[in-house]
Every structure is written in structure tokens, then in C-alpha cells.
Length: 81
Image (cartoon, rainbow, N blue to C red):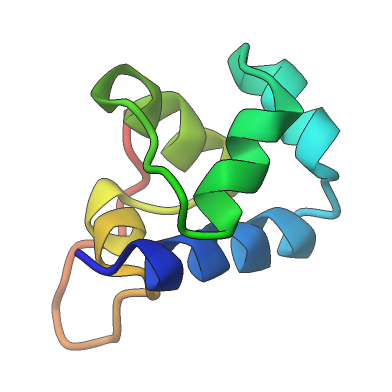
């Protein structure tokens, strides 16, 4: 896992949803500084936050941990539930 790549992906998906770091943090119950650390590659989401984060960003856990959207090669695109 490349923390910087994952962080950039989180930022990209957050911005695509027109959310600020503060908005995303409030929704999943963390500080905006935590979101900033993720997006700059200085930290990773805790396991307990992966599903809420994926749900809010409209991505799968696989996409989150790979740092990019799944292609149309048969990979499941179901959002985490």
C-alpha cells in the first residue's frame, strides 16, 4: 500500500463529492486534521473507519486500499456495506 497514492485518492474522491476535509471529518466522526494526515500520506484510516469512509466516498475498500478506481475488468464495484 502506497500511503501517498491512497491519500491523493481520498482527496480526489472527497473533492468529487464536493466535500471539504471538515465536512468529511464531521460525517465519519473524526477531526479534519486526521483527514489532512491521510490526504498527505502521513497516516492511514483505522480499520474501523474504512467502511464509513468508503460509503461516504462511494468507493469500495479495494479501491480505497489500492488508491484508484476499479476498472471494468469484472472487478466488483459494489460500495462497502
